[in-house]
Length: 252
Figure 1: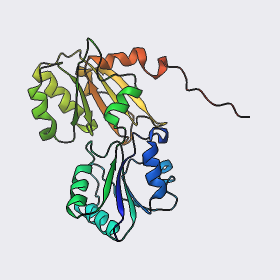
Figure 2: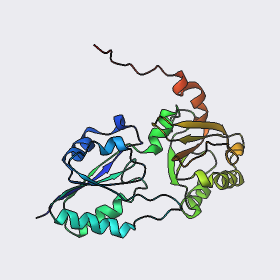
Figure 3: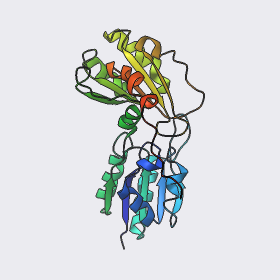
Figure 4: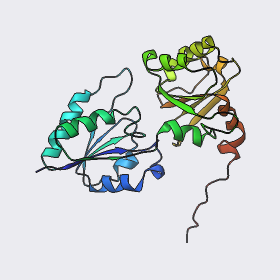
């Protein structure tokens, strides 16, 4: 008997930003394999399921990707409803494509439930539109953990042509800034570092590209998003401080 694997995007962290379809998959799950950045509140939406941590964090030991894929296949073949719960969107630097290929090649039924990626959510929540008329007509999302992943793209883009959004790049921000400056990006280009977006511990740094490498950030290992481009300056005008407080239902 074959079960079903749901590759689910958990969004940027706030349970309120989870999709209804994702919540339905969690409610029906018998097994949840979740990543490091998935909040406990989301796991509580799968009360019938067993929960297993299979996350990976930079510089720390973790379960091999091949092992995760074998576990997905074996559990589905055992007839279980399995949720592979990933922070953000499963197909944005989440290796969801690799898992989907493994399931398809094994003949295991699966579905993809998209999630809100921090590449879009973190800038938006900080008051930074990644595109804005007159400032940026496009944006590029890059993985910052390895220069081999982002450097060829940066070198191919004219300075200031698009908004650059880097994920997994906090430790590489000095190298990124140096490379961009060397490529001809103006030192005064606005830049932002957005930490733990959508969570109570969220924090934001804004400044210039020249200051990015030495930006003083809070201690800890909160996930971060880097934004480089003219749109980053808009955070000062339309960031959370300028927005109306969320309406709260009155208790009766």
